[in-house]
Image 1: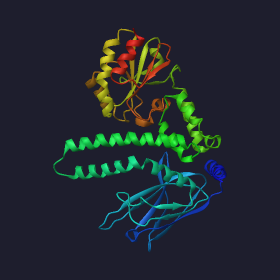
Image 2 (image 1 turned 90 degrees about the vertical axis):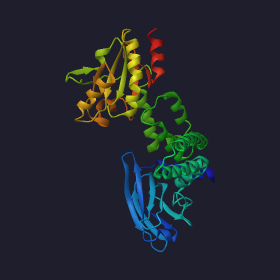
Image 3 (image 1 turned 60 degrees about the vertical axis):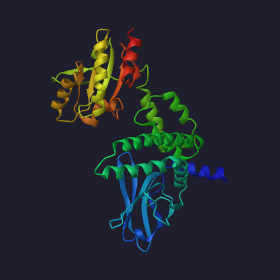
Image 4 (image 1 turned 45 degrees about the vertical axis):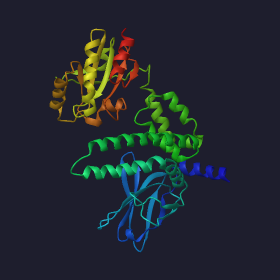
Length: 380
């Protein structure tokens, strides 16, 4: 019976050909929710979109939505009265759901925690994963609440705050480990594949290892919409993997000329993505300057690509001057819409690529001493 359910689940999860019709979420909640609105949002790479809202009357509400495929979603609630209650509940919604949401007592600090949700197999999977992560997430929620209260105090306990940050990072690492353990032991779950895809990030560096993990999921899930996205991301990332020739491009220099990446062919080149407004980039710049000064006479060069905004050319050049970045620079001044950033799948900075004299990628994201050590190895 369990195998039959999983087979049906895969069909529900992967199909994108449903005729659009209204699905329903009915709810029963405590009186504290009365005369307030509950919202249903769908989640996507472009943010949240409201699907429906409902006024809570006599402890009950009803939401309707029309979708054609499986979507991640969120129930959200916030009171406006004297007793502030806030909460949210992640969901998976499909075109065939008739879901019920039952909450007996408002949770803390999430007012919606502890709800019983029925009528959605994918949400049941999500709740099972949430329960597996609870040993870490409950502690993280508690520390978040403590940190917010501490920040409101007139006299800040910086020592106590630092201790909480350290504890939070430890729990976050524990959560990641629990999440990976759950995912790998439930590869027949759609929510595990969603988690896998989200953890891939903007660009995959370990192509072979990530492909091996993806192959552990059933074919039906790998052929789903989210599975196809994971495969596409892997293929795109592979084009920027080790031993691949870095894609060429041209862009304006600070003096208004045009420079190509291939103009530096024949040298070892660090392709460095940064911006004047990026604090971590500016903090890393002294390490890059040190490496440049040490190896600039040994067939090594740098091309900095700035993700500064339109109209911020002066800030860009001022940062170059102030940080002593005495190498080549280009920027199309398009911020995150930079054509070069898109070409190299850049979603965060600083990031860098080390290229050999043939323009092939030999290392990525070298920070601090790692950059010097890699250059020592290739420029010995």
